[in-house]
Length: 369
Image (cartoon, rainbow, N blue to C red; front, top):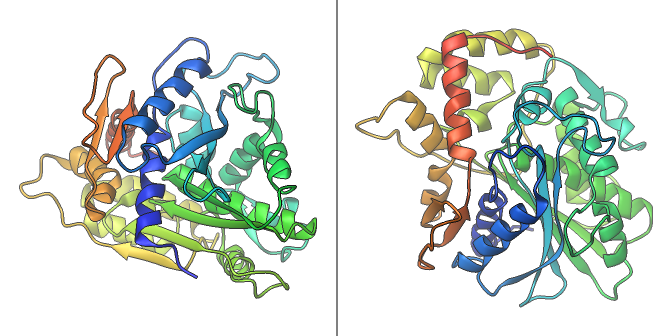
């Protein structure tokens, strides 16, 4: 089974819209994030009058559950929500925001020097299936700690929300999607959810995944196991719609398998030092990307506006360009035109990635926390 181009476009729009409300605030402001997401959904041609919000958005900062102080960057660590397709009422999409905070970058994205057994999350998984420590941490937040702090679904976990859908009559299709860190979480969480509901006997819950610009989640055994579960070959079940979409000139989508890291050094020689450090860190981890995939190649901007701008373009704008979609990022005081395919209000993604890539080049350092 394949995911149609139309659905790929919609999933990309939703993935970018999940960045709405990415602003620095001393305390979490879930109401503001929710308002920004709702406005972006209503303003974007790809999503206007298409979806109803049925859970969330859940806005989470590490430490917010036990009232401890979160990290000093004053950014939300995770945002996710679920929408229902008004045209096809049994079609749900869970959307997971990508990296924005220090927790995302250092505790989750870059935390690849250590691995955890996937069997922690799936008792039927092969013993040598491994995921990165960072992905393990991210899943723990989403599955065990995060609850919606907005309506609909106030104080309800994502799992409880899906459990309610499982009680509905007929086949209910749920697609997980996200960009960058959101993409790799979407596919990994999708694997967890598919096994969960098959194990519970809920064959009416059909879990699918569509990721954009995602780095690797785990090793070769994990990748093979993921493919077998989504294809329905490892147990009597159903074949899922699964697709990883990535730009060959996007450095995020080339991490963390060694071949991809070597390609980064060839594409962007100035990154030789930090990438070499990560190659040493992951050389024995056998990180392997998931399949099936849809790769594309966006030519380098010529004349190049500069390395950082090139990296940001290849990681963000190139995806909208590949689908022929117009993308605009505005602040909440603007009144953006509704003529754009994707409108994202208060999007800090590009600024944040610009800062991160600049730090990598200047420091040439590898964080091994």
